[in-house]
Image (cartoon, rainbow, N blue to C red):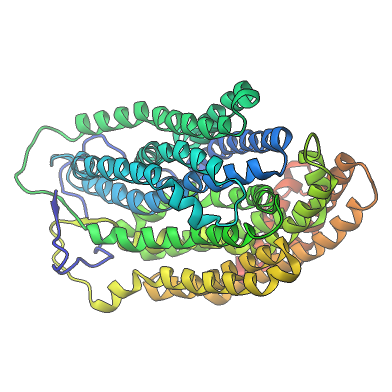
Length: 580
């Protein structure tokens, strides 16, 4: 593999479709079946992700039980900014945006010419050593600069010394997080989802082990040490599966050796992806900074509210986590139509899942927080404050999920590698579009900070949450337009019409769920009755409004229950929006 010079012309982001050589291909990873494969992959990913989220929730419950919302938890949560920033940059977002398309292109090249040197191994040799070196340097810099980092993030913190100690411990996570993100991207590109889906199970088990065993001795430092241990377990879980796929690819590629490289590394493609992810995470920095000047415990209320709220968003993001390798392969092969169809489906399905969760949180926030957190040092006042923040946060959840869906295909159009035999160059305008998501996120961040500054003095934590929801919604609207400018011809009227029907169903479900939850003072009963009312109302209203993401599952469930023994007729299908 070679490397483009920064001043050199860059390849076109969308290669022309290629056909494989005439000879019969050697065994290797071919296109995955769409139906059963997607269902199985999503099921495995959802199950393990739910387990990881459940353990993460248990982690937060223990933090609340052992330490409440206090100066100690505020100090730890400032230190938590390091792994909280490293995780999206190195696991969930930036590393995935860069390396899933890169490995997808390498696999396409392997299928086109199975007798050539394995492009996957070329990609690993060209990228992994440099990645390890960079990650080690970043971890060391974060540990040495902990005092300055704490002062920057939370200048009003009453106990900065404890935050500095916890920050130096959590700085260790940078290296294993990056390794885990790299290996997970490679495995997902190979359509292997089990091990990557289990990394947060391993991560939270490491945190829980030290939190259980040493909270009485080490205090909140036990949570910081658990974060470091959990990050090492994440990376260790993926090493074995990655090596097995790498050896299998080498065996399938044959023994012919050629002098030319098949891939060219484009390091400049890293910059807009990293800048976007850091800018997106800056919303958390802005909240922590403004929240540090508010009464003690405010940062903790924001954190607990964000953790609960993001459970709904995570469920929607799981959809595109499974389908992203398919989109990346379609774009690597030049099939824009297949990529567009997949992205439109992902936008609708993610919106349906997240809006259902949003309706539930808005209706049942007080009972959910009371049921989960109100014990030990976490009192009724903390419950009321956290529930109020959840309800405001929830307005931004659909936008957060849609950004997660849209940004993946956006960056896939210009991956970190290109074909070595593709001589076409990009124009300056197309390179400028690489930075469009960063500009959109900066504008959204400006809205977040402006609303936060204007509203925090009067509304406290609610003003910060309102700024977050406003800013992320602005960014999502800009990215929807940006995806079309990038070259993926989304049918915006169709997409927005479907989302409008889903929003209408969610609004009605929220009203009915709130009324149902208010019938009982018991948190468990209120959560169950309110949740059931939300689900039923969303299903009925979504079906009645013609939202295909709701109507399809409802008809399927009805057929399974025997209420609709015959499949929908052609006339029934014609009643769906856009004739689907």
